[in-house]
Length: 386
Image 1 (cartoon, rainbow, N blue to C red):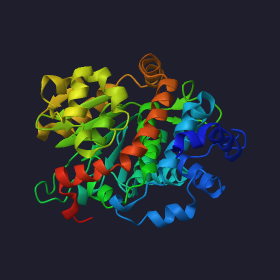
Image 2 (tube, helix red, strand yellow; image 1 turned 180 degrees about the vertical axis):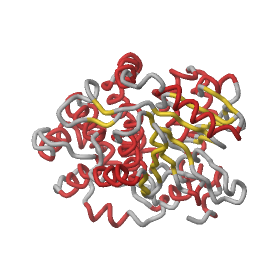
Image 3 (cartoon, rainbow, N blue to C red; image 1 turned 90 degrees about the vertical axis):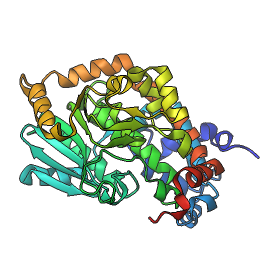
């Protein structure tokens, strides 16, 4: 049987051109795949295939979305079309304009999975999924990306802060936690699409790193961006640790820790494989991703990834001090300095090439029997309620 990659081939590029009017319009990943599946292309799943599989537990899915992974990988692997798709995902979401207008008039806006508030010169994004330790899932991804758009585009703030909200779990009730990564309960129950990973890393995470783009200019030349400060309390697990790798300044409580439990989960940890070696080095990165190494923020290795480690009760004060430090002389050069650092560390084309591999490999991980075994063995996923 032909693999999805062989079936896609150059046909994926022809299809992308047709769906984007010869790259004259930008189409987000989710809409692109919807249109592609509706086009009746033999090597892609039909909308009926995807709809029938959507409500099934992960272990019962046949993996129709693997063919979407092959399609997206082929597009991303092409320099011109791949950059066009990455550009599309950096544009503000369609619902961000209305949310920004509310924020301008009220100084705050509540979204699904996130809240944005203006506090002095900072726009503060609070991640919220209190029942699941602020884990990320289908209920949070759109709202968090919109919140990032709003914070970035707000004209009255100069810097942005990302922080986890209080949670409900009895062990941590009322405490702020940065976040527990992907919602493993929902993953096991089949409630997280394969496309979720691609939307997240091409969208909200890349916007934290590169800002929001303009339709008429390359994101490497022009974008709207501000410095981002992360406030890590409790832990930054999995995807939340990945987010720290694109922050401009990270403040961590001295009792907090970071992990990238990719081996226990059976998936690829976003773009951590690309970005973490720059901060922590190759050995620590491999130990974290492949050997489940836990990294206390106050450890020597943790301090490579955190700019400041403070007492847990001092977080509000530390955030305020950092905001004042970054804005005391204005932040007019911030965007230029961020671009200059990125062009040396992670040119956009390097990211595109990474995502071409990620789109293909994550599809196979997402539907691997090993993922189910890992979740049942390491997380008792079969007995958790979602």
